Image (cartoon, rainbow, N blue to C red; front, side, top):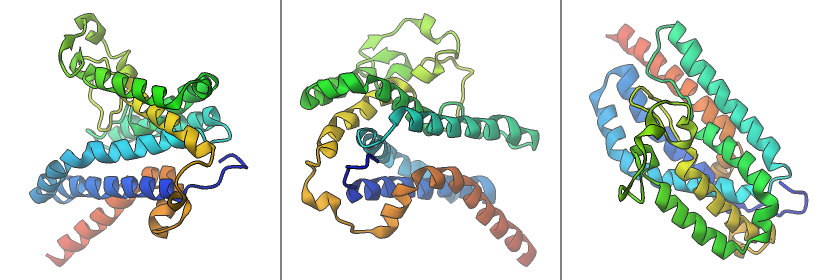
Length: 255
């Protein structure tokens, strides 16, 4: 954070809540994949309806914090680098050991890192813009591009040229063909506009104009997770796998 910025604890708590919800959600998927319990898949599928809510919290909060960062571009390259490390592990190293189907090519870290870099480069223009107008424009653009990955704009009302979907080279933007698969996928269209929406809200955060209650601590556990969200994201799957495989071996020995 900038040296003169007062920490908004509520943002840490919201980000921590979103990360914790994601970990719980992924745990049910791993219960199905590792332990073979079908109810894990069932619970995971039913909770998918809540995913966009948690995604929105995490991405908007990250956008707000881009206005509080000392160097948003530098942090973006760090996060993007972590995303590329995840790709290396899931798409190169894990398949060497026979573990396939978990490849991540442009997941949440790739997307957030790219959004931070783009937002940092655009920050001089963002600071000059009216924040309310900026939020409205971003909301419209988000709705307009929501269905880009499905070949259309404005929720299917406008069809996009099929030529955009012939290859996977434009996959970071949301254009890909039927051969593309990623276990975690967040295209820049539309999520960049949600991030920028948060960046415009961040104007009030950088001015110290958030309501007083947002600066007070309530749930220290969530705030701790939120402050260390990158490390929790990177560690959560290995930790879940370790616990479930340990349970699996103990269960087999006991049986």
